[in-house]
Length: 189
Image (cartoon, rainbow, N blue to C red; front, top):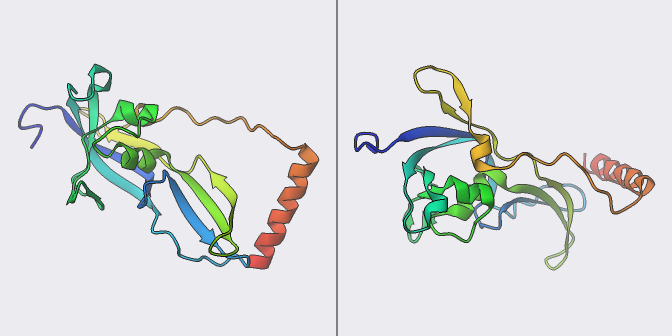
């Protein structure tokens, strides 16, 4: 419909797409001390999700946010009481401007949420044991104009993942913690 109105529009596919139900910008998984999944979160990761982008001038947000805007015709959550998503600026998503209107936090999480695993000891005590910051938002793609080639537009949504790891503990402490993780995993199996 938007193309019929002369508005540039394209289909976007996001692989490893997060569905952040509680909008905390992470996909949380809870396990007990034996490693059993507790099913306490409604968050999920989808193999892929598809939405549209359209090119708009954003007088409501300012010219910085002009350009491609995310519009999801198949939203799974209500926004302002109805099933809708967008138009969320891809520049806002990339810059992490999640305080903007038009479902920016939801789209940001879809492409950039952390996957966090927690051990729940009791209703009041939990401990984060693992966080994967690279799993979500892979190969964000659209179709090339005039061909069937894939165009990677991931850089429109997020900055490259940082590959450096900084340690606040010594390497030997880190190595010992890995051994402890293996013990937990063996116990869980």
